[in-house]
Amino acid sequence: MRKLLFCLFFLCFPWLWLQAQQRIAFARLPPFERAVVCVKFFEGFHGKGCYPYVGYGHQLQKGEHFSSNMPEWQADSLLRADLMAQFDRFKCYGKDALLLSLLAYNVGAGRLIGYGRHPKSKLLRKIEAGDRNFYREYMSFCLYKGRVSKVLMKRRQVEYRKFHIP
Image (cartoon, rainbow, N blue to C red):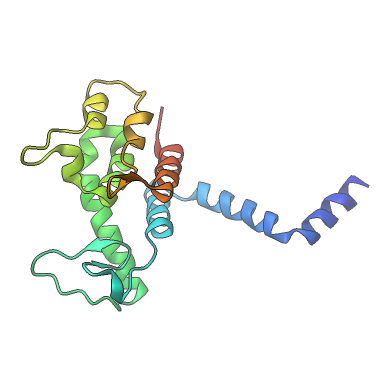
């Protein structure tokens, strides 16, 4: 009887089965691949109206000439190169390197490391001090144009939950 109910449930609600399968597949990916999937999900593919951003959130730099209608494989390659560059910058932070790389990809490394008259972030100072309780500092990067963005808040929660290693 239980097996029959179980089968009927998943026949009537197949998306629940698919969501479970997707979560299992996501969990089996290597950490860097999970990070790529996460960025793709939250950034989306930037089209013509998103200048100076192309692909999956790559900000065009001086001298770069990428088209906004680039193929998906090129956008994927560009994302991986950018994320790896951020990872190389933060690899000295050990198990927090990927989490910091994801954040820096979205907000810019200068917001974390500090630039000009802007000091090093509280998040980075806390990690350097060995304090593992930095959820609040990580979640402080949810502002867009001075206001808390629900989309950024959800993104930070997912990143923290999936990539923070206690």
